[in-house]
Length: 417
Ligand code: SF4
Image (cartoon, rainbow, N blue to C red; front, side):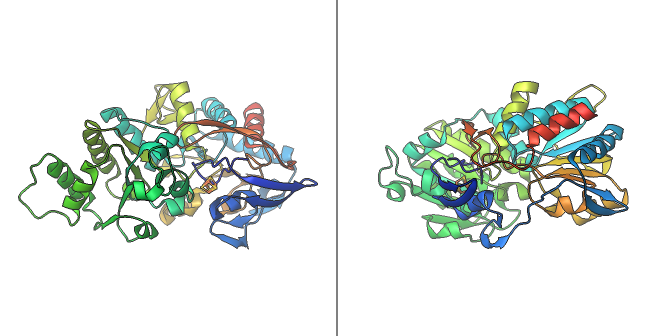
C-alpha cells in the first residue's frame, strides 16, 4: 500500500482493514499516519476534524447544504468572477489535476501550484544549467556524498533518510551511513546535525557568499576577503566522492530564492563535470511532481499558467499577487495558514469569495464561502501520483468513500459553470 503523506510515496505500508474500517497501519511515519487517521502531523493524539457535509455561508454563517446547492453556489461564484485564481493541487491526485487544468482553461483563470515559490526557482535553474538527474533508487545505490541545503527531511519527508539518502543500504552503499558522507547547511541547527558528518550553520543572508566561496575554492582561487565559516570544509566535502546529491528544502527559498537556487544549480553543474552530481528538491507535497509533469506535457512549460492573460496564455515562475483576484478556488491546500496577515485581511475586506475542496477543516475552509468535503486520494479514492523523482504510481482505493473525489467535484463544477 502506498502512503500519500509526502513526495516519497512510500510503497511498503501494511494496512489492516475489517468491515470497511481501517484498524492499523504498519511501516508508516507520524506524518503518514495523519493521511490514514484524522490526526495532526507529528501529534497523533491531536485530532483533525473531518468535514462531513458540504457547507455554504448563509447570512455570513456556514450551514450544511446539499451537494447540488453547494455546486450551484460555487458555480455562480466562479462563473461570475472576472479574475479567478485556482490554487493548490500539489496534494491532489493527477486525475484531479487534469480536471483542474481543464476548469482553469474554461474559467480563463490563473492556476497556481501551492509550492510555486519553492519549485519555480528550481525549474528555472534546471533549464539554465541542464543538470544531471537520477531516480531515488539510483541515489540510494550510488550516492556517497549527500548534502542537505536548507532541508530537514525529518520534517518534510521523514522516511527519506532511511529509504534513500542517509541510512539506506544500496548496491554500492551496502553499509548505509558508513558508506556515505553526509553534510547539511541551514540557518539553524536542526535534528539532521545528529547524523551529519559536517553541519554548517550559516547566518541569514550569507548563503550566496558561502556558495560563491565554495565555487572559488573548487576552482583553486579563493578570494582575498574573509570567507563564510565552513566554506573550505564544504568545498573539501563536495570535491570528494564518486556520486553526489544536493537535496534542497524550503529553507533555500526563504531568502534570495531565485539567486540562491541558481548558484546551487551552478555548483551542482560544476561538480557534475567530474562525477554525477544531482540537485533535488525535497517535496513534502505528495504529487507536486505530477502537477509540473502535467503542466509540462500540456503547456510545454512547468510554470504557473494564466489563461486570463490578454495573449490567451501566459506562463510564469512568479508567484501571484493575491490582490488582483476576485474569486479563489482552493484544492488540497491551506493558503490561509501561511498567507501574510495583511493579504488575508485584504481579501476579507474586499469580500473575495473562496471555494475550498478539502477532506479536513482548516483555516481556509473556516473562511470559505463554499466548502466541499472530499475523499482521501489513495485511501478512499483511486488516483495516480508522481513520486518526487517523477516515478508514476497507482494509488488504490481501500475504504468505501462517503464523499466525492476532487476530480468529480472539479468536473461537476466545469459542467455547472
Ligand atoms: S516518508 Fe512520507 S510517504 Fe513515507 S510514510 Fe512518511 S509521510 Fe508517508
